[in-house]
Length: 374
Image 1 (cartoon, rainbow, N blue to C red):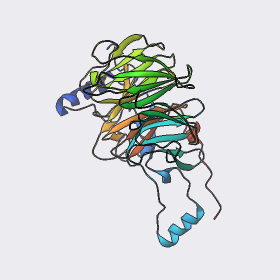
Image 2 (image 1 turned 120 degrees about the vertical axis):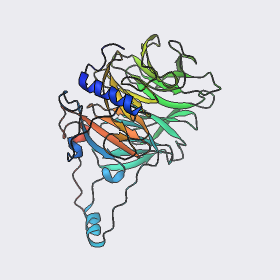
Image 3 (image 1 turned 120 degrees about the horizontal axis):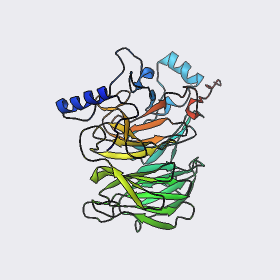
């Protein structure tokens, strides 16, 4: 790859990171803020490089979103009883629309919804009309409709923003091993990743009309060549309509135009910056940058639209903390540029804010007023 790390990582930091790799034999380690710094002072990368992101918050459950009621606060003061919070059992993917955070929980079989703007929590997929069995990949369209890739039913389930079941796409006759779903809102398409398996040749991306559910075309087949896949994991659509696909077993990201024509790929297996070891989900931002989660490295790496590495955030750790991950999986970039990172092991969502965005700006900056009724 050419011109690596030209966004934020200095040459000195790059050499230091590579040196650590040689000594430790593991993925890159993210530099952390000085001892004593509070969580909201964690910035990425550290000086002298220009700061790009600030760690903002972690969401573990409903108590992190729903404001405390006066009666609950009084009860806690009198009895010491803590408020109950519904947490995450095995989160996988995340999608966000106007401050409403959707998280798939494959163990509890729901999509859990944390609405920061309205200060409320609810679940999707627990009714008879559109039940979920093993929700994995998620995405939303421009109206906030939710698309859920259900690995057990082998279908994409579509719900309104408030959880009303609308329709489904596909089924056991269409998909073999469903992994993720991606919405191309501009072209009204849905891209569904069929990860395949050891004994399967169905390693491809299936493209459907988002309104009718009609199958339009497929991307790829099993293989190692250009435009071929080995265990594809996820897809994302860039600002120019280009399609970016995590080709997990081939340790790369492949790029196609909006009609499915192969353009190029980047990445290779390895332990150094810009390599992949266990790539999972992928996302893009408004500037066209690409965010790729790597479960083995415990981080997400950020590339430009051509595949040049810009920076990375996170480190693999057995101890929970901001930007520390044991089993990261899902990632999403919202309308304001905030980045949401899911870790299955620590059962959390970390949120990172662009450095130039004020804490009270954007959808997530709109906090509800605490209730006053008793």
